[in-house]
Image (cartoon, rainbow, N blue to C red; front, top):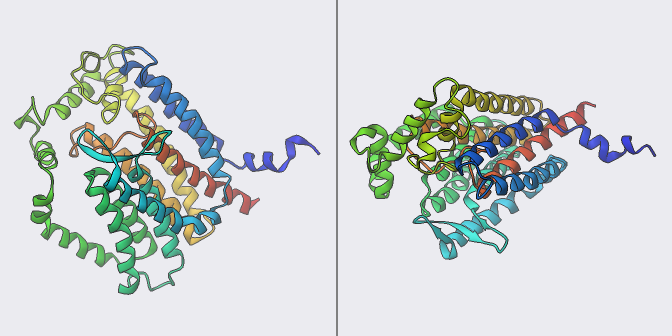
Length: 369
């Protein structure tokens, strides 16, 4: 048998290798940013992040070889396991930075709320796959769907992690919209949420309220709660068109910019690489998002379409909120920049997400061959 034409070789050939190269280019640039953030050293971030990415890239490619029908069958068990894990965080989770978000599973500290961003899209896509046309907005269909979204979002809010809770809600609502739930229901929900804002405000933690107030007026406390966003905007603005040059960032290297390797990695990058560096990242991610939408449009079933667009929307939420946050266009929340910011659970989530979408793209090619 010709080894170059074996079944595994044919399956691998159906993978979107152009997208894989774009993902590698984004992650590679992220390693450069982390190297600079550490003052020109591989430790403590760049080397570990590189090893982590290589392992997770292999995992993503393996997931891409799994037929999408398997995820249809596994959706409920995956959602259930993640929901139990979120309960486990409340009972025995590790506390970091005043928040209880991690479970110690021996080999790593796992953040189940990150994986639930995928779990909610997976279970909602499976749920509406079997809903007959015209029944999407019926109360006996819609109320269980809303409960599926509310349960993990409420558990994540208890950690507390507003940014991740909003991401879970966003992914679920996108699937509701694409499944055909009537538009007036979204309008009614938005009006109800607006009416409940005073109650929601009273339920926020003090630091969360302070983040919203600082977003509205960063100059009110530039040395306190507004310090992060003020320094971030200084770093981005000082980068200009082409940046200050590799390893020449002042806000980052002189320790003015906090969380320079995690939430504010984009600001670290923009200071040294300028507008051109920012456009490089945005264009590459724009290409990945466009590929994801095109993959969804060519999907062979309702489940695959809803899953693919829901996952692409979740990735877009990551990107949009992080970039808006560091530019002062959104309140500061704990959402990292995918593939660039330091973090194991967040990178794992993004690579699983990309692996599932690549699996749908592979199934599309298999169906059309």
